[in-house]
Structures are given as C-alpha cells and as structure tokens.
Image (cartoon, rainbow, N blue to C red; front, side, top):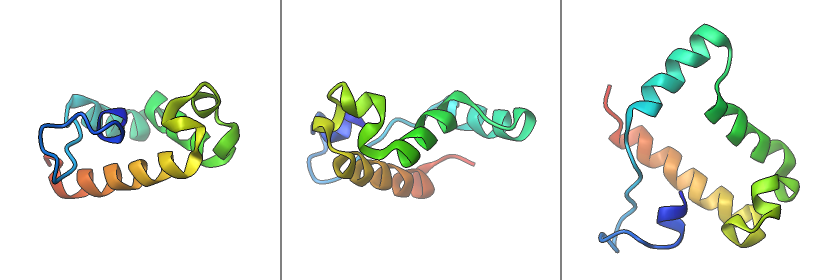
Length: 84
C-alpha cells in the first residue's frame, strides 16, 4: 500500500498492488487457525484508527483517512486481480 501511496508505480494512471502467495496463505491460516498476522494487523487499524501504532509512527502521513483510502483501493484491486 505504501508503494501506491507514494506513487512509485511506473503505471501512473492505475493502481498496482503486489499479488503473491501471502494472499493464499492468509486464507488458509484464517480457516485453520482463526486468524493470521495480516488480518490482525489490518483489523487493528480499523479499531484503533488514528491511534494505530503505524500511523502514530508516521505511515500515511499519520492520517487514518489516507490509510483507509489506499486500503479500500487495495481491497478493490485484489477483488478484480487476484488469482483463484
């Protein structure tokens, strides 16, 4: 998400997020273990909002709304571009 936030992509007209094995592993861990580090990390953001530690440390310019915008774009991207 930081890659897109800071506009590092060579595709300036569209969002490009990484698609890797972590997505499949996330689904498996969720079903087998009832959670995984990715889900816990992003769930904490939804609960803590501006008090979320990564924001307090400066990610997304310490602004939850900026994080939320990029996260929503990532969710949409993965809905339309994930394998499987």
